[in-house]
Image 1 (tube, rainbow, N blue to C red):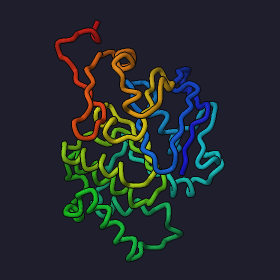
Image 2 (spheres, one colour):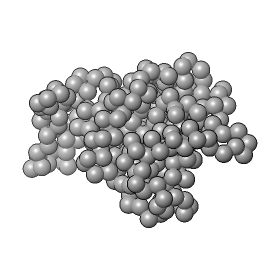
Image 3 (spheres, rainbow, N blue to C red):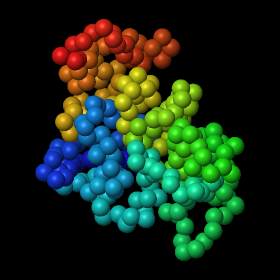
Length: 260
């Protein structure tokens, strides 16, 4: 499923959070949104999973305006893991994961055997199956994050939206998640702070600053020292990964240029 932001602006309480944003992701493409805090990454993603409505402009799914699609239908197409995802109710892990099937249910229908198997498979893929009977409130931050990713997968979306999904994850689970994104076949929009992870996981990057897209392209085309210095305030040394060739950024902690 193709995704397009077309001249999207978002203004809230007199502040412009996103300004005439134009961005697209082709079906099956992994597109990373990168930029400093307050650059508009999360706001742009919220417009896609309908937590916000653009002040001007529109978001399109396969050429259809998102606001013309019934909410239940778009919920079957777009799954989101947000920074604000919380699990305050004392549900088991299996119950939280099963909530991902909600957009597909009609009336009071219970989950079928095939749907419960889908839940188990999603828990296996995110390494939480052994926690299925545990209360989600008893889990660590990283464990909860993996449970919420499993819930999104159970939704069987065509578009997966992830806002800082590696928060709380240890190195192993960061690598496993981003490796999954590379091969899942879904259209993936992911906001990441770690530029090295973004370069490794994404087909294309969109660099945002001040609510607008500064540049888009393949990681090797986008992650140049001058652009990183201009947008992020630091000047890295950039070297290719010895195996994949993906650009990797090295920072000199004695360089105070970005603090001046």
